[in-house]
Amino acid sequence: MYIIFSVFRSETSVMQNEINLHKTRKLLDYHGIDYTEVLGCYKGSKEQSLRVPMAALEVIKAIANKFNQESVLLVDSENRVSLLFQNNESMGLGMLKEITEFEALNSEAWSLIGNTYYKAS
Image (tube, rainbow, N blue to C red):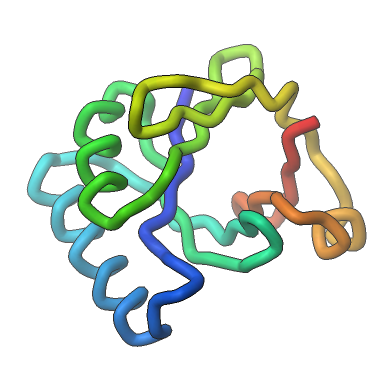
């Protein structure tokens, strides 16, 4: 079980997004939270994202809130995917499935983890 989240904002400059990502890495290191960097796409915008263990949920929600993120992506042990919003409401998105690069690049939302593209459907 894990979380994928980003601190990037489309209306924020590239430089500020990179600064926010650096601050987030430092916060994760401070809290002893392991993370993997992944590339994601949300609402058609590519963004650097981080994958962290589900056990870090409360810290991640606080970080997401600090950087004005509306939600984080949760993936359970059976690859069911949901968005968890800041008000603690959630929205199921289906199952996380492997897709081709072509499918990903023609989609509004996906994650590239390692060399594999994934999408909720």
